[in-house]
Image 1: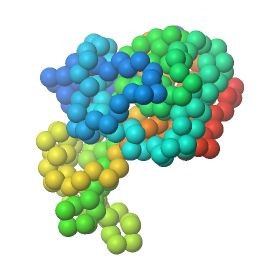
Image 2: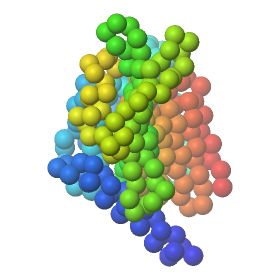
Image 3: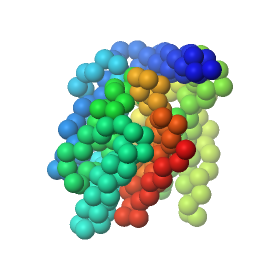
Length: 252
């Protein structure tokens, strides 16, 4: 049973990796390794790519995490709560965690660095969906959303969608080039953006560790809003991590 499960996970990971390289043929899978530090500088442009090479992991666009956190005391509370949640995660999953500071911003990098002693390195990371909320120079708003279809696990397909946001705040689907919107290039996404200013960057993604453990998470402006991870027959689910009333639960 476990052998079949691991073979299934392995096939999925290979398919996801092949899809990533098909979409980014000149890039090497890598991720920026940051020491967990409450004084880290996350104020970098949304288009900047983290370039420190780690051959088995995926580079992710860096965004400003600081902008998503509430200022002052609330921000300190959010970071303090996340450090406490990391200890809860380690105790629940029965794994070692790296926690260097009493306050840790709830970012993707910080989560993976903290889990590395117990789960090892991430071998595959993929975005299931991304969403850019944008404002045009004339004040009108639009949204670019991408979604990955895994109906054929050996050939997942990414699709891009463009929406205008009407005066009532509802998205209205716009026509796009169907060929260019299928597995869209960065150039095509930038074309859809058309010089509009970024208001909010959201993404839903997953990462797989060396032994097949999966972490599924949602981020807003570089801050983790929620995530879940399973190991040793237990699952940790955390929600509201970008707010002062965040919560983590450990269930079997």
